[in-house]
Length: 487
Ligand SMILES: [Zn+2]
Image 1 (tube, rainbow, N blue to C red):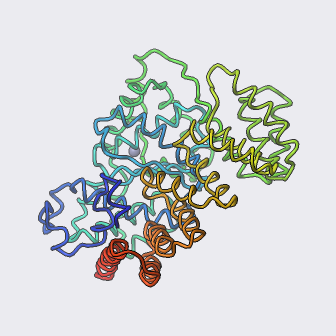
Image 2: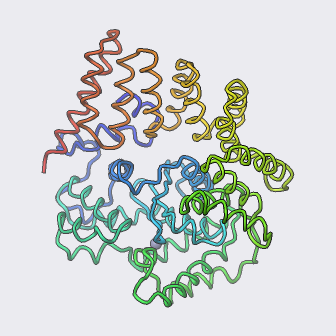
């Protein structure tokens, strides 16, 4: 697919080759699959395995489809990746809606973070420590070696195995079923990282953490707290400790390395606090959230008042108390504007836009978004809202233009394609509409639905060039479907 290929160099062949495991399709650079126990997957294979798992995750309910939380994780993550030994790998970080404490890495640089972990860490350095450790698992190709070491005879079964490993990491309940369908249950024991893997990830992770100017003492502190909590919970060990086995050796090893380093206090970023506030609010009803943040602000004892007021404004808006939300927002912006560590923040401005839209002054709101998008051109939540507003205001062409520019930045963001399809529909551009819808489905792994949309695109008709891109997309999808139906 054109959109998928042109702008995502790390995954150039992602969709095209993803499911094409016939020897002809992947013969280039492919090692002898007769004895994979001796080899490590190629970077392309790793990327494909990760990419396919990602498609399944995107389509699942567990995927936390909040662009602000995911943008934040990618900002933090890319800062860490810059200090790893593979800064150009093209990592993707994403949130999983699961209150158990866990983070997991997939081959190819896809790293998932459970909401439970985001809520449990006590500082941004702790979160950065966990991410650095996961980044190290990827750059050291631990998972890829694990998959390659299973003596499978085809890349297809490796992908299936990777999917099983992923299931084990995200949701232990489905593990058994998933694994039983792939290989003997005996494999399960080998799915956890080895002690050597863990120590290597700790060592390299600490190095990344330090180079990125976070507090490296956060790593042993987090593990220590997790272990203490586990003792109280008896057999209910957090997933994180299950998938990253922790031993006294490991803890001692980390403590040793860290001890020699001075303790440095690194303040949490405002976005870290706002993301957590958002997650806390999402666990509560609007009324409960208003009470919770109101109390927190009233007691003024702990927590960050900017984050607490951000939570309050969001909750008021959810409860349709627009007037009070607008007043609290004014206070929030004054606070944020004068706080030493925070300038105006994209998340606060996104919320401000939502309050403005609720106030229903469309002219002023359009002007607000025009300037906000200029200030924060990368903030997807703002783009979603602005393009929706443009369409509501009858400016579908401007919306389509804005969305097309964003898609080049985020070619796997299905929400952008959905919005784009809507903008094209408003303009009566049927071919483009169905093609955008097809991309949205394809990135969620819904290949039949995508093909159906391309049929509709073809029927709608268009220029010779447009029709030939539809044709070529259809050929790629059919090839993927063919490959999928093979054992
Ligand atoms: Zn680990």
